Length: 458
Image (tube, rainbow, N blue to C red):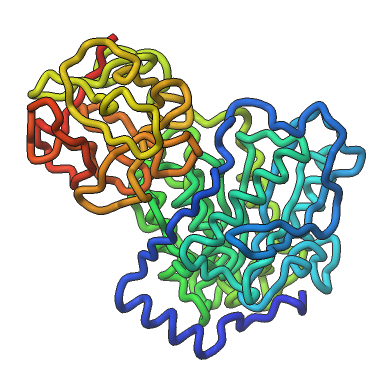
């Protein structure tokens, strides 16, 4: 695996990492205007039932005004009537999509961190994609790499038959950071991620919704210390509701590894931590030496982790049916407490950007909301409740906009009657604790106030 050097961050990058650690990196990784790929999470993609429009090899795509590229691996004997698992493989700093796809000096045996060979042995079950980072990295400036993944997903799903409940991400070092960023920002798109020796380098926009997570990290890592991997892991220990613990790790000098599955996690959202001694900053350690190679145990652990998931994940919030806030979540009115007034689209307008407000409940279509499997609150059938301008600060106006699957249009209905934004973590709030007709609906820090309490009425 000589194409995967041990030291993957140069002095400048290491200095940047140290500075980011001081200020507490929480890059906004702003989300672009393209739609995320979870608009049909429980149905076959557009590519199903049709001759494929994509084949194995290099491809290009326009994203955020730039020409981006990726390499695709379609299974032999591809069947357009079979929905395939999709696994992303992100390269390290200074690496390339070709390094991931080719497997470097270990060739096919290490292609996509060894997962491709295992997939081919399991009845050609998986489509693989290796995106190429800008300047061979994943800085995700302004969220452009998140947007790139959104655009790439849409292209792959339109050209091939993909099971949208079986989309995964894996990556080493900077690629691990990008996989972590996707877990944070696209929790309803990615079923699980595997982060090999990662750090918070690509941002974490979100990080409050559950995603199945496996982290793998070496005690001797002198590029991204194991403490950075523990921090990423703990984000999803919290989000997945796992019981906190300090999982066992091998002794320094033992040249072994220990894999720990956390207890208490939400059903369908496990967290696994794999710590190893021996190889340092490396995705392919081998027990008993400080060497690496395709015979590593990591490929088998990650493959087992990904393939345990079958079908859609358990819902973390209700869709249609009973809601903890009362009533059902289909064609319902959202009623504020203590005003008793409804969340209303101002002037019955259907235009993008129209603000929502409190108004006397009268049963009009501009007051009828449906909570979808994608955590959207829709009105008029095609418009979504939207945090204006992807805002994540107190006072951000709530408006309607064409549904696009982005996290500023995703909401969690909580058992305590609050409604929180997936992107911001803020609560839906009646501005200034107002109760009068025309009171604007905004985002605000959750504070337990009655103006942040809502119920559903059919």
